[in-house]
Amino acid sequence: MFKTYLWHAALVGLGGSVGAVLRFAISGLVHRSLPSVTLPIGTLCVNVLGCLVIGFLGGLVELRQVFGPQARLFLFIGVLGSFTTFSTFAYETLALTQQADFLRASVNVLFQIVLCLACVWLGFAVSKLM
Image 1: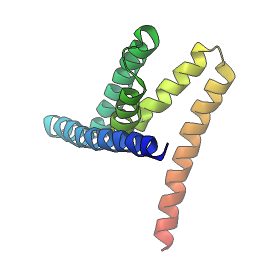
Image 2 (image 1 turned 90 degrees about the horizontal axis):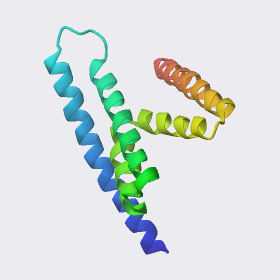
Image 3 (image 1 turned 120 degrees about the horizontal axis):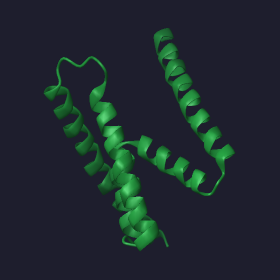
């Protein structure tokens, strides 16, 4: 059992390193290609692309069972998890709406946005006090 856990953790870690490098490369490429854009366009592009990819792969898993559990660990949690956690948030919210659980989907969106923004503000405020 412990060997299985270590194998799964290694898959997630390897995928995470791939996703982090992809995020760095794509975001940087976008910023270099659009230097006059003043919005954080690289992050937006990474999040949008990550959502597109996780939706596509999620559909393949759900409709065609294309990937096994280990490939899902590598791709969903590892690669896409480090590429953008926003894609995971979006996918989980979609899953709630597909289950017609609109209240929980709405609460998830509200909590994710409000609490995450509040925590970024709080962390920044605390760092200024140090």
